[in-house]
Image (cartoon, rainbow, N blue to C red; front, side):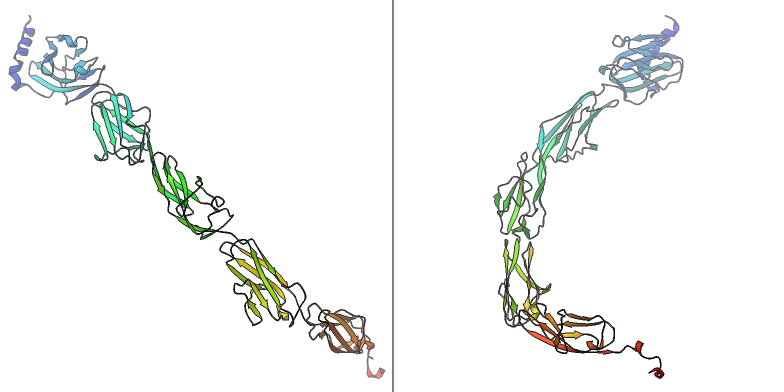
Length: 504
């Protein structure tokens, strides 16, 4: 054996006795991680030196490789998988196995000093086959306990749960988690719909690889019914029968709730969530209406707040029955009766010519229910349009009656000029208040003329047109005749007078 080899062998044998003189820390702090089947280099911090001896030991017991005098010796378990860098003592392992995980110690001897170091190698199996399983196919809110198990293949695994895009928070009370090296068990007690909105993802990772579930996991949480309400929540106090009014019941529920309607606590035979008036038209009294929502999965049944209203028939028609013959002022009496059909009469109002009619005088007397009005005796001012307006809480109808009170004629008046010039047109207008309208006769100086109209026209006045004009007004029903007179003078026109007095 050459002297160098002998020297190196002696140094190796003396190494345990030189512990106090060995320089430590030529390997990085561990652990150093590497994947199964891959390669890893445990690199020292030594710069290139003339190294006499390099020795690597596994778990402080088993030799891995020794470099002495330029010769490399590899333990049988590492044959074909180890290489050494003779300039810095670094060890490269290939085709890594899980059993390669552990503590690695190196000792390097040079002509000047002895160097040593220790590090930990962690051979990691990559993450794969991440999968979620549930203890139940679906859940009921507040009732079910859901246990989700995330499992994966790999070493030194940690797990993370995601609901949609938000991490699931483990509170240690209602939501708990049990972790092992290969699984995570998430337990959710009294599950809420928000706990598993989903999709649910599970991510498994170790120091080198991370993998999530490839297929999102979804678990249906059945809930409700909640927030059971009727629309409109505040309907009118009275609803007209036959209108398009309807009630709508709604609830937050999965699956959708079924609805049952009640009238004062009695069930209405309809399964519709939107009953129309036509469906409940038989319930005409003031009542409370409620609906009850039921979830077929959760078996919960929840009532709505009540709404109250009364279905009322509207007034369908109104008629005024009154006198049909001639009514004579100061002699006749008129009884107007207002008759309504359909619905319940709530109020009766009387109007004359669009203004409220009241008991303005002892002549006007209303029935106690105001369904009729008696006017006695009639006067000329009672002529006009009478209206009966019948209303209730949901409708209003009107009827009209045209009252004609015969009277007159009263004293006529003639509207005309008192003096005109020869050849001027003259109009005399006679008017007399009368129902029916009066017939007129004109007389000149007591002699009847051919004019029977209210207006007497003289196309071109002459001197013979001067005189007293009498207008006689006659009512064919009352047979009353009244008259008045007007004096008309016809004067010579100034245009025909001589230009000067000398020509007279």
